[in-house]
Length: 310
Image: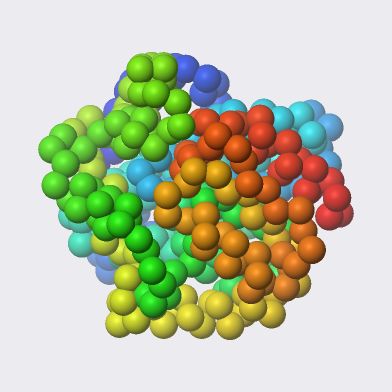
């Protein structure tokens, strides 16, 4: 496996991102002993509450997405762990897009959070592909998790209606040249693109110096199960058999204007026992990247939910 690594100088001193980097070394699983260096944030309160919060980003962002959400959680006493998925952020990036599969992403994430960091009693906050991975981990290791907050995400099994926006994104992710993470974020914000700080958009692009660093971001949309025969469809169906019996406290917080996953969030709230009777949140004037659109309106219900489910 050929692996690329983003130069540190590209991702140092980014606006609003003062966090110290941490790294975990994991086996890539390529059968040749290749290791991957995975970056994660690990921010801790001076007076810890004992709660560990795992924040999982999605496509095509990285832990920079959580920069406004982590400080209020730490201020509330919680430890926040936010990894960059392999292929994103400061984590290593396999150069061949076919090294990225649904199962390999799941195995890499499991290695980091359970085998290296040994996280237990986890509060999971998952967004976009962070849910496609995090909800699988939840179903396969339910005893590791204390509560869940799902934001603009789903766990598809291949028989759901994805809608025209996803089909547009599927084509755009493969054909865009250049592929700009910052541009993707900007297009999906409620505010006008002209009102977005260009330094923030540049920060989203910073870990990706050029096309050789982008195969993970290009491949993710192709891994979403869109037919019952897709690679992960059966495993996700198996996960749903667990989730539909799960009493773990579960909160949905979705953007009012998210074009793909909001309806799937409503479906999760109905199907998962631990979500029944919870004060699920629809955040006004927020689109897919609600962490950018309305960070305070997202952080507040998360802090309240953790505090109300000891």
